[in-house]
Length: 209
Image 1 (cartoon, rainbow, N blue to C red):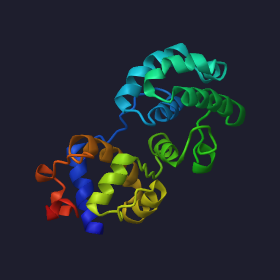
Image 2: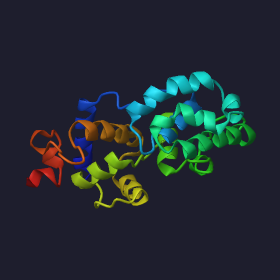
Image 3: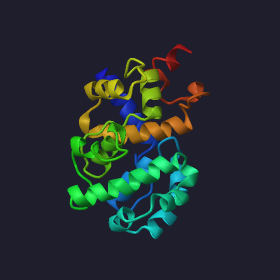
């Protein structure tokens, strides 16, 4: 397994050298908010919405004082805008009141914020704090199951635990970002391009096709 994982990591690095999050942001809390908006929505759509949102509310203080209904108008196209707008406002308030306006750097603190689960917390820990992070979104869950790095579970926490056992910690964050890119380009949900897949030789699913 160790040599298989090493080969997969190196091939993904060749395909996607940067391995970056596709959400656009300038401030730490903007990434936190963008990830919240990305739930049940594409990163591309979020990137279309956030410039106007962050221009209208340019600080945590302005978000904390905002009317959620107005925030909702800016993020309407992201879906579930009523819940997301309330989470952004309440999250801004909590960051100011309990964390001195800083995005916290531990899993326990992050998941205490409104609308923040383990997937979001892992992404923040990896991208902002450069800690080992296992961002188990739908692409990562699907592809690692097909590759045989996990047992095919659809439960994000189970997948996270299994990946912690096989992925080198300092490769984990970039690996998960590359899973997203790979899932969009090649290992798609409905029609994976197995015949042309550069990971086919190490894929439990693809090598039997």
